[in-house]
View 1 (cartoon, rainbow, N blue to C red):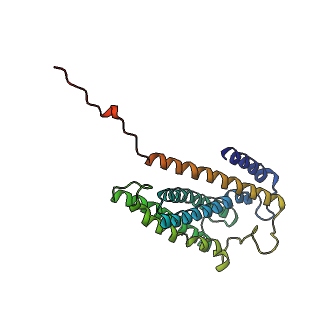
View 2: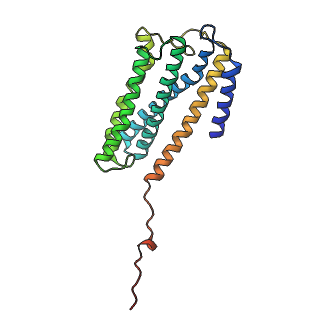
View 3: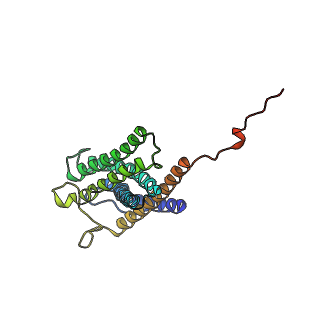
Length: 232
């Protein structure tokens, strides 16, 4: 999967950087779309994993689902921050400002704060209760409830450009009518989304495996516990 993600990333770089034409109005600044949109969409996917894994934990009580929720939240927070960062650069180039009190921007910032708070809650509970984050029900239960509740912000972010007046452009690829996008742009964007999705999935599995290894009990060594006998 890692090699496939690397290949898709290379293809997306070539397609987005050279093969796709610049936007008629925004020029080359539009190429930030091939970073901004995949980061935002895969962040949505990561928070969907948090929702699903948290629900699965609340139903079945398997702590492995809690570890998936934690790893996905970490990934989603990083990608949301990346989406805000690339969006700020894009906005500066096109709107002439780094930040605007736009519904999409404000709701995305709230989403970032919500899941950063989710991770902070996990850490605070682990420290207060002397528990292992990812390996203790005393942390997992309240964290799962917070993970389910936090997802309520995701549809607010996505539909904010429809519900309120916004500077942010509305859906293009998933527009109800024929998408007004050049085929080469669409191909580059789909390659970028596929590359980001596969890379994020690899990172998620790697992070969960790392958590499980760290939380696994160390095998006891009888030799280390052996007491040497005295002489005489």
